[in-house]
Image (cartoon, rainbow, N blue to C red; front, side, top):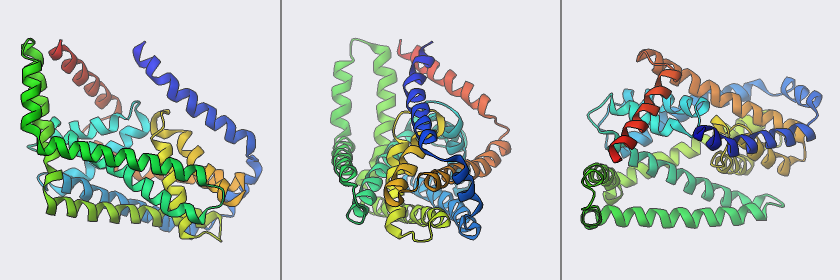
Length: 333
């Protein structure tokens, strides 16, 4: 029952956005747009999508201080994305921390902070990219304000994380004093915080953080290239700023509560951005659906191979994650 209640808001948003798009889109024109698309550009976008995953693995491995092997991180990244596409509550993020902890000498709670940092930086980059494209997009002033707000929130979040990373002993001392009356909470929470702060230490290592920024920048640049070719396949007049605007909008759309895989919110954000740029609802929705298909193919191939190599299934991992959450709740109680 609790899971159902957590599903409901995202399901309503996803279904509502899909209904809006279907209302405005001419399905016949959308099919024609797919038939007339430039498949050479779509092929290039597909290849670039796999390169994106390869670079994303290096982004995460840098945050992990190169402790796990690249192979382990690469397959785990794919597994995380396929979990996000098919399981609720963005369990792919928890799932990849869980899966990588079983392939390396790193603890689950030592890995998890690196995912928090990675995702927070993703939001920061999406805000920057969106803001950079705004001056070239007519009628997108509202999106610019949203980008500024999100950018400020992300910056404040990183400042807070940096302070915690620098002052972790002070924070641990306060926690132990406040939790002294509850030995179980002190033991479990103390272990949690020690591992969490250990993962945050990447923020205090200047050279490591610069390497992370380099790979993250290259990763987002690769995403812009992929989006450029997807959009160009449907709109020959496409400019790089269109790809930046569409990518930034899609990233924000993915952060909105939705069904697994950002169903509806991705199409609404990406397709809506293209409608704003082109005025063509049918071709824009065709491009958005292509982007959706590419997400499934890229994550499905890499994640599927990774899961098969380890003898895992989506349902099996879902049960393991639910058991992990239940054990942690029992320990705290």
